[in-house]
Length: 361
Image (tube, rainbow, N blue to C red; front, side, top):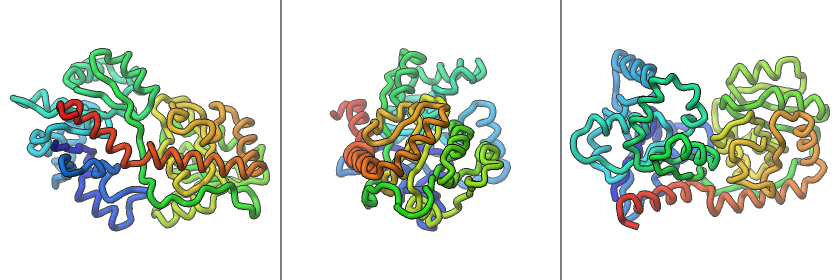
C-alpha cells in the first residue's frame, strides 16, 4: 500500500528535515513531520509531499488563491504526480484536505482514497461565508473519510456532513525518552508555566487566577497580543518568546506545574502542550473543554471549569499541597501516552483505516 502524506507547504519532507536537523523546530518534533513515517513497513510505503521552489510572483498567486478559497490548491497541484500515484492520501488540516479534493475534481480518471483531516473547520463552519460553505460541501462529497482529533468535532462533523464517513483519530507525539513523573519542585515560590498561541487560550482567566496565588510566579510562552495584554500590570507574570528548544525544554524542566487555560472550543485545543508537559513529567492543569478528557481523564490531568479564576487558583495551590497526588496523575498520563497517545499509535491508526478503505484489512 502506497501512502502519500500531503502536508502544508513548509512541512515538506526535505524542508522539515533541514529545519529539524538545524534545531529550529520548536517542540518535541521528529525527523519527519507528525511521525506519519512510523506507518512505514514491509508492505506500507510512505511518501511525503515536497515544497516546490517558487518565485515571489508564484508565491503571490498561491496566497491569492488561498485567500479566495480558504485553502491551498496550488501546493496540491504541484504535488499531483506523486499524489495521484498513491493508493491513499493522508492530510493534516482542512487546507490540505480541501486542496486535494479540488485537485480530484480537476482530475480525469481514478484517484486515490483520501483520509482528510480537519482541525478548525467544524468549529469555524458557521463563520464561513456562504459561497465557501457551498464549495466545501461540494468538495466534501468526494471525501472517503473525514478525520478529526476531537471526539466533539467528530460528533459535530457527523451532523454537518451526514453523507461523509467521519472518524476520530486521536493525536499523539513522540513518547520515547519520557522524563520520570514528578510533583512540583520543593524549592522557593511556585513556578507556573503556560504555553501556546492558539486563539482559544484564555489568558485573562489565568492571569486573574494568579492574583489569588501571591506566592506563585507565572511564565507565559506566547507571541500573541492577547497574552501580553492579559499579563499587563501583573508583577508576578512574565511573557516570554521562546526561540529554541533548549529554552523550551528548560522551561518545562523548571516548572512546578503547566497550566493550559482554554476558552470553549470543540477541537481539543491545547492537547499538544499537555502531551509535551506529560513527556517532561510535569503535572498539568487544564480547562475542561474541547474533548480533552477523552485523551486524558481526571485521574491524569487536574481539570477546572472554563472561565473560573478562583477554581484555577485553587487547582494551582493543590498541586503544591498534594505533590504525591500530582505525581500519580502524571504517571497515569504517561501510561496512556505510551499505549495510545504516541505518534506511533497515531500513525498506526491511519494505517488500519487505510487498509480497510483499500480492501486490505
